[in-house]
Image (cartoon, rainbow, N blue to C red; front, side, top):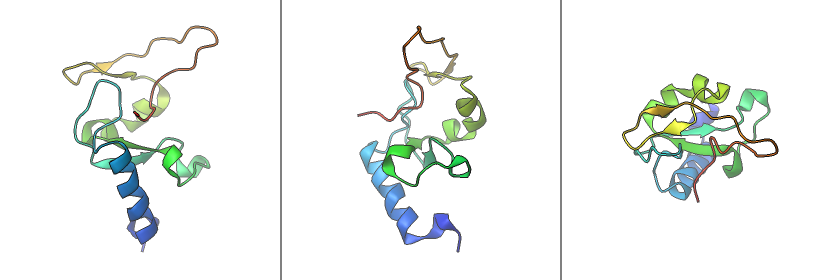
Length: 100
């Protein structure tokens, strides 16, 4: 059994989906979420905790390498990727944060 088949992960996944109202959290998307993704990857020391999880639609899940690299800032109202804009000095980027 892999970690992602354990009751602990299934409960955490369900909690993340409920928190995000079963919608993709990428700004401007709002499609139905089907995947719960670690914001900071487990392999990089990311925690298995709600604060490190986000709900994604299939399209954004497939785009994860670009999301992690910061090459996509979200989607417009039609679901097309928006290129990132550089944050102003002292401003944190808003990309990849859970709603709510």
